[in-house]
Image (cartoon, rainbow, N blue to C red; front, side, top):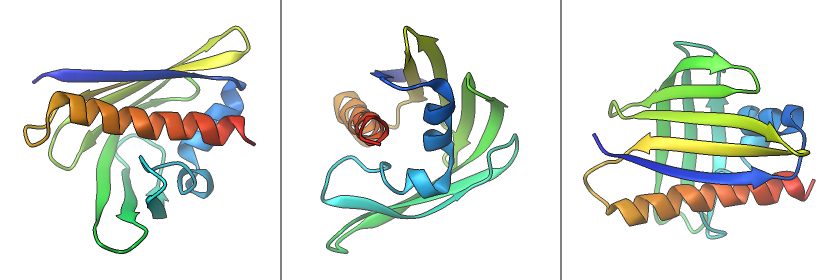
Length: 136
């Protein structure tokens, strides 16, 4: 299966980045690609074989979906891997560099949307995460 990667560097320390990436009270503030969308509900149990569910929906109520999966591996401040409900795998690597944290996210492509559309959507969410962390 083809893999797609996105990345960013966040001007923050690792503990803060990890907390904002993993805690529901923060995920609801950044887990969407555009300002027309939001993430009104998050369930997140950060441990191997535990499930997560993040509700993403248009603010006007026109559409929405649950982004769900099961965690495979968690290494605090370093790595998160999980499987989405359709079986595709995702890996997120966190690396501290020069008073910042570099995040690399790799995911298996799905066959409905173009690779570029998928890359753009995942990158937009990652960029939103960066903006959220750096504005706090």
